Amino acid sequence: MKKSTILFIIICLFTATAFAQTAFSVETKKFIDYNDPVTIFKNALLIDGTGNAARPHQTVIISNGKIDWVGDDAKANVPKGAKTIDLNGKTLMPGLVMTHEHIYISAFSRTPQNLNLRQVPVTFPRLYLACGATTIRTTGCIEPYSDIRIKKDIDAGIVPGPSIELTAPYMQGQNSQFEQMNELKSPEDAIKFVNYWADQGFTSFKGYMNIDQPTLRAAIEAAHKRHLKVTAHLCAVTYREAAEIGIDHLEHGFMESTDFVKGKIENACPASGLQSIAGLNPEGDSVKSLMQFLINKKVGVTSTLAVLEDLSAKYKAPSENLLEMFSPDNRDYYLKQFAFIESLKATTPQVATMLNNAFTNNARMEKMFYDMGGLLSVGTDPTGDGGIIAGLGNWRAIELLVEADGFTPLQAIKIATLNGAITLGFEKKIGTIEVGKNADLLIIDGDPSKNISDIRKVEWVFKNGVGYDSKKMFESVRGKVGFY
Image (cartoon, rainbow, N blue to C red; front, side, top):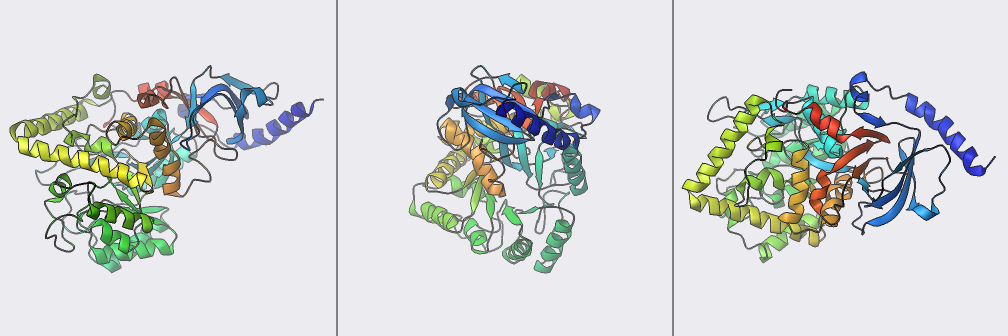
């Protein structure tokens, strides 16, 4: 008996036991096309996630949910009888690692002053996986016990979805504009908050706009004692102040930086944050100084251009493909919000110019931060005007890294894979196609290394070696986003 055949039999005996431990539900099985002990991909155009050029005619062998071998087709030692998928020049790339996601969507306002958010526990996990996001961080939650259950059910194979890094409820200060956010009243309150939610199983935390320095510092110190990370969408606290007190990450590029607001009052959220970004010279010494300070402090930044795109002068009317995804009431909500924003731009051209300048400067600053050596990841943030949703929004966020920031497609893919893994501390397990890492892979009918929009042509998503049909998952929730 040949050595390769003996090895294959051993692998099958070992992996059959491991695979039997995952009992997928009837619902999840509807979307699974591949679930074999050993799977071989051959004749692939390989994008490995490191930023290196795509390589044609590559073979990747996976077993027991892990990557076993990567190399040229001609050098592959393929065991007979193993499941082989001839990709015929299609792209094989790592699963997306998205670092600013949610399991809720913008919904209806209860009052003119406050916004309400709606949990979508069925549609969003499915859409995330369908678009190729095999790992996400829920960067702030509104229904924590629902998020815990969603993660548990996904991990158990009961429902389809990505691997989830759970972020606790928002750490907000006083006078929150969202009724579903708790307001921390003191540093002591923050310490209790962090410890409580860490005990519930949350592994990261997020500060929000009105939180002050003493409270944020206490939360960071409490999280770090438990070896957990803190990110933030800031306003009352500046980026430099947050870096000084030990924050790990910052959200929304530089759009939420209030470091450049003239006369800013300490621990107060100014009304002129966007104006200050719009009026900046991104090449100025003050901007470069802030970026270098963040880099020295090892503070990463998440780009969320998709949710900010409605500020841009190039923002387009919603596509029918997007509108078809919504439930009727959420479609109506989004169209009304879109019309309101466009009307505001049309009637107040000075505001439209300011918003566009802020968007453009932020995009330039993200690219500068990356070029200076900063850790930039990418996320969707499905909130805003209600038109950014899981799946389609993830693709748009990555496209905008190229269209607005000026990254090459391969750089954008690296930001959406390896950099996301580094941000979450998972770079030894996911983010690139390397031997020993999880078999989180995408099969794409195109070449996103040349045309980033080909990232929308996902056919199958492999998560831990199990292959899901992307189209089936999208179709299963069409017309239901916002309903459940």
